[in-house]
Length: 168
Image (cartoon, rainbow, N blue to C red):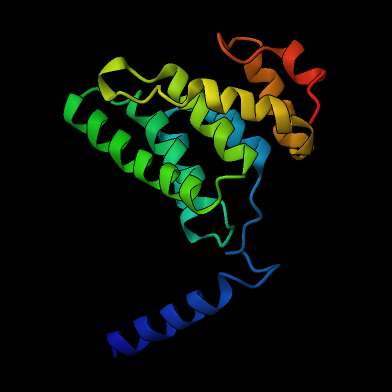
């Protein structure tokens, strides 16, 4: 009897998670994502990862990968830091490999690269990512443009004046 109830529940959940208007359906909120990425706690990052994991957006692996690498900075055990960073790096780099022209992916990588500890050797693409973002900045959605501009105010490699006047 319990197995029949579980199968029924699983069937309802699987069918309802992709139906717009369903309580299980979530639209991805990029603004919230960037807010959590900027100053979120480990719990907020975990919640965002959970939402992304059940979602169907194309960019979810890049977003999850970035969040995992950000979370690596928030945990205390070196083993956990390295494990989270590696898992996130694989997800983000896989997303970049499948869509290398996605400007937002380059921005996500740049943010992580700029703050990654030297020991993880994740800095080699900083100049390339910066140039790519500057070149294609105007093609980003407005929410992402705002996130890039906001980030550029504190970045050592990406500066607001280089974005505002960026041309193809």
